[in-house]
Amino acid sequence: MALSTSSNFPRPDDAFRAIVEAHRGLSEEQSADFDAALVLILANHIGDIEVLKEAIVLARRRMVDGQQQQQQQQQQQ
Image 1 (spheres, rainbow, N blue to C red):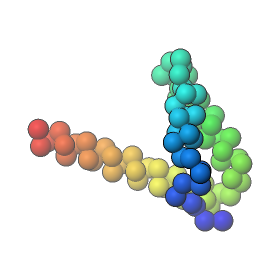
Image 2 (image 1 turned 90 degrees about the vertical axis):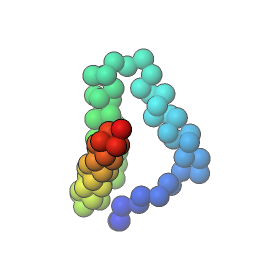
Image 3 (image 1 turned 120 degrees about the horizontal axis):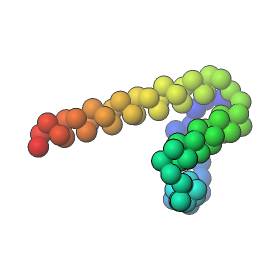
Image 4 (image 1 turned 45 degrees about the vertical axis):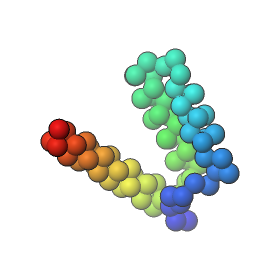
């Protein structure tokens, strides 16, 4: 199974909204714990270590790219 990076939801905004709503009322620590639990549950559902590894690489790359963009914007100000 290959990692799918396009939306598989007929209404992607509903999926995003559900995740945001799940965080409502949680502290920062609870929110981080929730995210970790959700990731582990979904990773188990996928059940493919290669897809999981590919997703990890993609997520880390996006974080690094986002941090670099923020730094560049701060330097331009």
